[in-house]
Length: 567
Image (cartoon, rainbow, N blue to C red; front, side, top):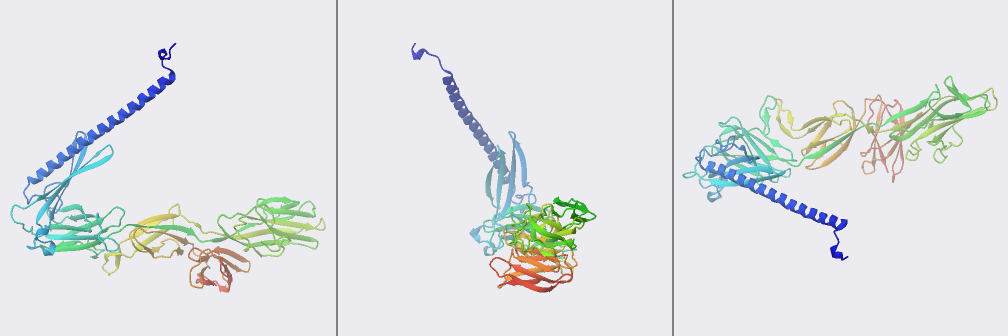
């Protein structure tokens, strides 16, 4: 049989269908694009027609009547109007302003002193198709029927600058005056030089100006009130045939992130042997009447505590124990790691033999290598009728700072908007907030210097210290450490010989029966609280510096900061 007489195979059919599908999808895409283009073309034509109709309406008005409701010059034309054509909504924005023609000079150089030479009308029609926002705009000049004449008003010349004093284009300038008839309420935008000139403004002393831009700070005029008796700047005054000038400064917002932490605290793990809850294991020992002893007439026995693993460990402190031995009995306590292995003597001198006199300082144990410790007691006796007794043991440690949520704070800038009757400044920016459940809050603020106060907490440190100097678009993070009032406390500040603050230095504070380790913050501060009223020694070390010890530091009440200089 000839191969030309055979039918189509399944593969041939699948390939053919696939080709037809690709073709149909391409045709569908072309059809869809064609329909969208057609819709856009019809919508634009309708927008142009609406703009032309509005412009023709404006041309039909008398020169004196040409203006917008709430605008300068004032008139009967609505600033915004909406309409629907073929199911598509359109917004028509009409803007009319006076202009000063450079042909006869501008501003004070105008040959005849009249800056309201003619009017400019702008009509913008906006619409949206398939998520695309489009607009068309028409602009036309409107000349007076005779020679140019003053309207009897004055000129507002508004300048918007950034923090460096350079003109800022594209800033929104909202002008309001409810005391004129008709009232004024309209928005315009600065030119590339940051200027807005409004000619023909009615004489009044109640012009309110509000300046803004997305992502920027804002500026405005302020009313005189019983609280703000001397507003700065106050409402602007327009005088006939005069120019009123004002400058407003705005710039990109800065961000300030505040993280709140609690001060480091010294805690103690202890076991008074009320039961065996704090023992990980024991051999030939028993707990009875608040003591650990040998059991069942055993001559040797041992017990190991549960592992002590603090959450935010800064340093280990003091090992203490209450032991009693008689002739022929011994009791030694060793310090083990989290796995129950005794620490080598190179880490804790004398640990292999065990300790029988206390307290024992553990401040030399590196927390990075030993984040958890346990205690082990070895008991021996040479007679079944006698036993050593361990009536309690304890291990102190220091942990923190830790995140502290919901700390209330107030930030106050230095910029003012006036003074009260007592000539007390009224500050522009006062932000009252909390650090929230996450112990952190970011505020968007304009460039300024901000003081920090805590209305319901005791501030130990702000790192970096307030006031916070914020520049435009600057991002700053600060950590605030708070602590409750303490009967006796001691701040220790660590610097190098040049006065530079040393962060991450290790500060060990000791006295009889007490030892605590608190590393310095990024700003060089270690804070110790809940101390006894006595004298202490502070040993300070940091990589690359010689270890320094300061002795006989008196602590009583709210003790002044002790500064330690590392050579």
